Image (cartoon, rainbow, N blue to C red; front, side, top):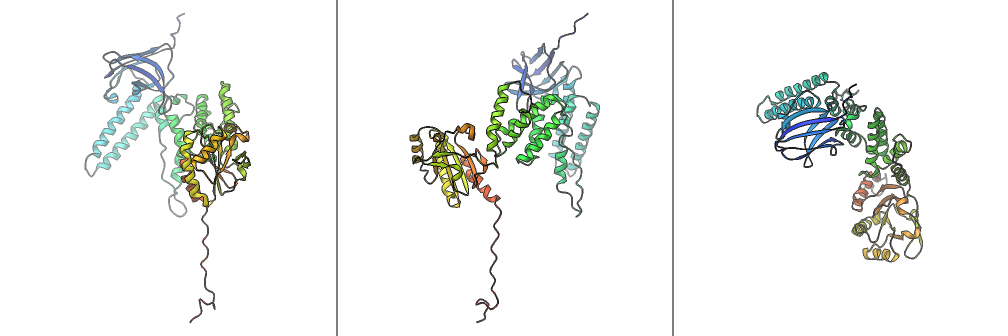
Length: 464
């Protein structure tokens, strides 16, 4: 009995303008990253061959030269050949036989032709420009619809559908006769993933999964912990259609909010860790990684925005205990620093100015030197002229500041209200002023005192 051929790939290319270059065949992993799968050396005429004894996982690939993408390929078939001029890949590419990449470039050629026509019309000064453009756009929509109908199972169509925008119908009218102003947004959001097939793991080897998750979470979702948790759970539920898609979705969302650039959103990380990692929904064979996630969630959970910061008590310069929860102030900035830290020394004058500018409004600072010697601590306070603040020597408390307050770099700043509720964590000193002004704007306006009116018979109303 003849033995079946081993799984392999063989992709032959002739790329004019690519002479004597090392080229990589790589699949996308997010919009800006890629995973190399094979390497080839082009000859003087730009001929190169990617071949290997393994099957390439299907997806959207690129040929990369000198760390820059030269062109894209849709890898479905494992054996095909093509030629093109690198000066105009789309316009010149030719494939020896039909296939996914050939189909992909058929669509790209049509788009290129339409784009050139629309650009030429826009550069004219004719009165019928918009009519002509509208006709071309209608032609494009018809072509796309027919293209999808003719190739419903192709990966190229899956990629097109993955990036498709929802077509929003006209907004219905409210009882007052006006269009519903919320309809467009709500419809767009609820249909955002209509064309995205969460069951197809090939989409993971494209830029589109991360782009869709980012857009949905960062632009279509209110940036509060509760709203983000609700939508994260929704996305995980959709991703359960495929094991690999599920793992990526959980990993990506968790990773985004462990060190969120938006203050106060690390509660999303804690939720993801507890609901998916620590319950085994997201399996990890690496026990060290699971232990790290568990430890991180345990550290962050008591430090989330809205919670009362754990109390501490450390000695001041006279050896007296000073508790954080005993500090009086409408707002309290907990400034945790190292006297030898260069960034701490740069931040100190900015902290001093912020404190002095708002001290009369009830601002107070609880400054904690988390390590180093008592002498260097006192020297720091003296040289930086930080009078008026509450200064304590952290080592006298016996606290592990990294574990209890997440101080893995200095300075670490907490912005607290008068009840020591955490309003913001890890806030850069440079942003204290803007954050304080933001908090002030959130305060309800105080009602104006009524203008006194003269009573009948009073001196003000008595005629002279």
